[in-house]
Each structure stands twice: as C-alpha cells, then as structure tokens.
Length: 391
Image (cartoon, rainbow, N blue to C red; front, side, top):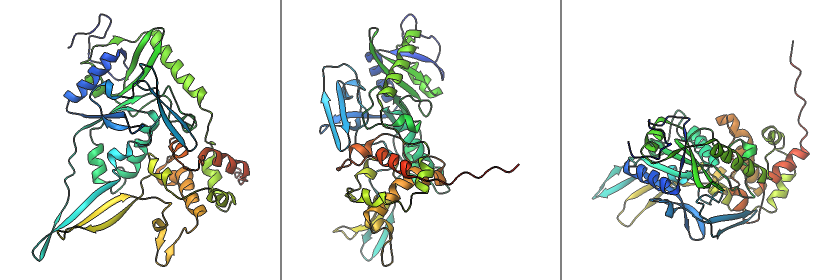
C-alpha cells in the first residue's frame, strides 16, 4: 500500500467509496493507469478546440480553458484559472475511438495472376478514457446497444470497447447549448464509470471529489495518495451539480417521441429545409449517430481495399434505391434524422438516440436548434386521446 495522508482509507477502496485528490493526486492517478498498461486518452487543446488526445499528466488537459458555445458558434478562451474541466464538450466525441470514421474491412493483395484476401487484426490496447462527460458516457451506452449487443456485433467496436476503463468528469460548466438534464444524462454521473471526478474550487481549495464505481476503479485508486471525503466535500459536489443544472435553459420536451410520430406530414419540415444545408455536420459531431457506407478502392499495386466510412442520412445516396433517392428533399432527410434520433430509436433500441450534448446546435452552420424545433412540433401536435383502459 502506498503512503497516504493521515485520514485516508487504509483498505482497498470499494464501489461507493468517496475520496478527495489534489491535482498532484490526479497526476498520480493518470500515472497509475499508464503503469497498468492503459492508453490514457482525454481532452486536450489543439487547433483552437478541445479535442481528444493522449494524456500523460494533468498538464495535457485544458487547464484554464473554457468554451463559448451557442447556435452555430464555438470558441475556446484561455483564462487565469487552475481548473482542468471548466468547459462542456468539444467537437469530437468518443465515438471516433470505438467506431473510427474510416476503417479497412479487408484487402485483396495481387501476386501475379492471383489475389490473396487479408483481414486486418482486431487487437487493440486497453483504453482508459479520462475526463469523459456524463452525457458522453451515456452515448457510449447507446452505441453499445447498436454495435455490440445485437445478434451480429461489430467486431472492431467490440475489440476496442473491451476492457475500457472510464474516468468520468462530472460537468460543472455546461454550455448554453447543453440540455442533458431533460435527457436524464447529466450533469452528474450515476453509472457506467470506474471512477467519477467532480472538480471543486472554493474556499476549501482546488480539489477533486472522486467516487468509486467499480472494483477495478477502487483497485487503481487505492494506489494513489488521497484523503477521505468530508461532509463539506460532498456538499460542494452537490452544489456544483445544482449550479450546473440551473444554468441550462434548453430542454427537450418529455413527450417528443410521440409528438414526432404524429408529425410526419407537418409543414414545418419544409420550413426547416429552407435553412438546412444538408451538410451532415450534425451527424458527424453527434456521439451516437452510427450510419456507415462501404466503398471499394484500388491502389497502384493492384490491391483492392474495402473501406467502411461514416455516412449520414443527409446524403442523397444514403437512401438510394434503384432509380433514385427515397428522400430527395432536404425536409425529408431532416425529418428522417430528427424522427429517428428522438422517436423511432426507442422502437429499435429502447432508448433515445440523443443525450443532450448540444453539439448539433453549436456545429450547425446556420444555427438550427433541435430543442427549438422540438418545442414547435410539440406546440403544433394534436395527439390522439389515449384509449380508456378496459375493466
């Protein structure tokens, strides 16, 4: 057992235990994960955005950075601040770590007059995602339903997802585009993590309240110098989350699935199409969109490579059948995206396809706001009266 402070636990930590780390302790936690042969990946600053990258210490995190997000706008600002997680979400989600935007399926290598088929190896190093937001952990859970829990799981996704270690950073600085509270995915984390961090900076100092969510999370954290969380620390965490909730003004109507199911012929789809560019930005930044396409390409050696790339329901070819695209208009394509995301996803996966991260709002070039559109559909909706139950 490593040396710990006087009031730290002396036994191995268990799920449900709560401790406090300093920033030095957080550095030690990252080191402990790397020593356990995890590739640690987390938020970093690059090209004026907060994006995912390798993390070897807290100095790699966006220390002192905050983000400014609104419809069609994203900026990061550097301030004189010691906090590591004073921002919401960046343009890139964790989806790309498990379901890359471009993957080789197989290749046929030419040798004389014959071809040999070669499939890529699936082995992946153990991954630790460090600093994922609760909404992003929820998004990984949604992708699990789609890509690994069906009859035919995606082998590459399963390989990369296996043995994933999750360190979630509860959100104390949501953007104006966030609406996770109405989706039940934040700002606090309730499950899906090995360790949960809550960054506190108040009169008691700068520190991290850490909750243990799994046995292996407790085993890793037990090797790090720490202090037992006090009642003041627990109150500070609750206050952090309450303040975050009060800052979120956007919401998704609770009955939106039923509303959209009865809005297929609404004229509002055409009104949205007058603004929508069908650029597919919303699907590319979305942490749960999973559509893909397959292409065969060749190189100068004569090899044939089959590649899978991300696709989008905003592409004309996405719904192409013999003779043309089924969804030829922008309105029909936006209807497909929004209705699937918020309504028919429930029929397929018993969950919503939206986690309230707000990326589709911030990264839409014309600032279309999915929560505003949902509120207008709700306002227009004339839902059928529920049938009286038989007695």
